[in-house]
Length: 141
Image 1 (cartoon, rainbow, N blue to C red):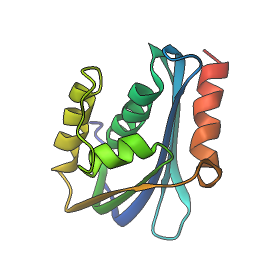
Image 2: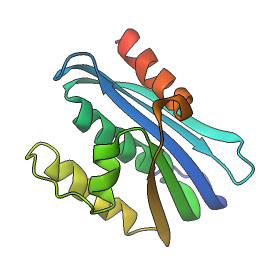
Image 3: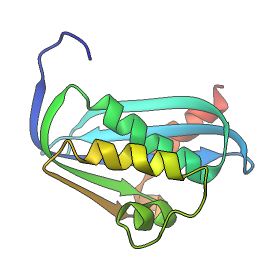
Image 4: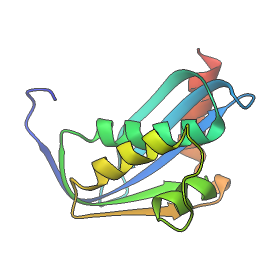
């Protein structure tokens, strides 16, 4: 964590996306953070090497938690276009894949630091900014 003062927000929205070209294949993540007024306050686009689509989706959520590490936030609402990851994080589905289990645990441990964290599935067309950042990362690897 940097020496900067904590950035305070009551509530933020985070859109994340992870993708791989091939499964597994070259992968990238995109994160867009919005404040209470729906203004973009932070973004991240990163190439993450060779991985699967689902691993990339989890790594995008993990990157979002790292990105907001210097924020003082009470409530975080995540929006993802991966129904599988959302249902796993909401504990509707069990995590059976051994490659996803440690990523799920890392996300779960990050959740514990906040008063309220939600995960909502959105259709891809409602996740355009995060999708664009993930694709930029894959294009610029």
